[in-house]
Image 1: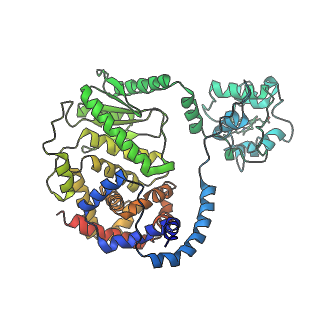
Image 2: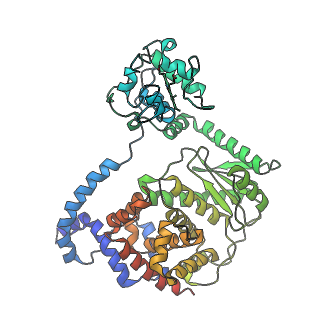
Image 3: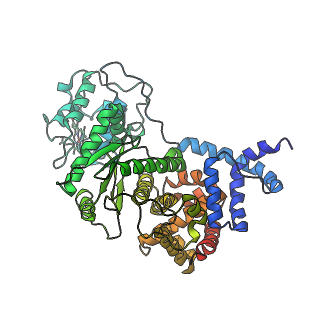
Length: 509
Ligand code: HEC
């Protein structure tokens, strides 16, 4: 008996597999499930309860063997930790961080493999050793002497053809001077790096470098950039607008909203942001800057914003957009209230929560918070890796639904999911998950939303972080994600999901 807790801890992942079966057995009703979910939010530590101890025991042994293999796999595929910030001796540049990224981004495409820079230029820049060797005829740098180094002279234009070769390609002044400075300081490779390793294997990406630069800024300076970007983008939408910027921990609302509405919006966004971060786990994209929240009081200004800043037209239903994985990330939205004060909620919050989604009538108008939360969720998931669309849109809408549960918008999404079910769930869901041309954006969103809501309102939610972590590696990971999070095949999983959709959403009609 005393062994039981330890056993259960070890076979927790297995319990998640059982949960799939348990869900099939019990078909937990939506509103009860939501109450359970709310409770669990408050007490997240509670684990799964023992369901079928003898079956679990039998499988536990097989399980732990499999688990070991997976742990090793995990360690291998774990993203590299942020580059160590051991201070370099004053004034000295690091090849790995200061030079290699420039070469990888601008040069190795031609100067390696079958590239023309290697074939015609006879210069291989793919490893430090090869760079050191130079061309068959001569070296391309002289340590300490940038003025005598082809590597420098070719990028500053003193030797022609200028590198990187090609029409109007030119390195920034900063990149040129960094290469020159590195040669001047002795052109050394960082200690501990194998000279034969490919530059790609250790060069920070331009995005990593940009993030490091931003992190090195003082917070006030960083915020100033966020605000400047916001004002510039607002101008593109409508030069006559003079919005106010108000910051919270992770957001900067830029708008002409009344102050109390800004404060409420920021509070709500912070809560949803924390929720999303928890769900996405370590794989979550971390915007180093505050996320700008641009709110337009006129629909026309929002439409013009998307047209001029994002270079596309919005459909008439779309009222929010987000770009998170880029410099000065933002969410932009149209305020359905047009800047008016919020009406006090007509019903007590407790009552509406209990009745949940089973009530057919809900508000037809979205709330600004709901719109921005949905865009935040979608944008954050999209920025977090190679997440498929169904997961980004589904999770975004789901998180927003927690904020405005009675809104008719979600009823329509559930309706669409149910129609997908009625129209042949097996093929419909597979199409939506695969994002084929035949599927509409609404179907993809509905199937994604239904899967996320199903997972999150049942015991399956415990496996969700594992599932999501896998999915962030790409749509191709679906089968593996289902296996590692739920010990389930795609067919089993979708079958049980379909039954749940039939039971829960079918009742809503
Ligand atoms: C579009 C293909 C291309 C790209 C991109 C490119 N190169 Fe080249 N590179 C060439 C070719 C072709 C030659 C030979 C041209 C010549 O000298 O006639 C060459 C020659 C050179 C040489 C002269 C080698 C010698 O003989 O001394 C250097 C140095 C060089 N490249 C460095 C770079 C660097 C550094 C970058 C990135 C900043 C770069 N190249 C990007 C194609 C490219």
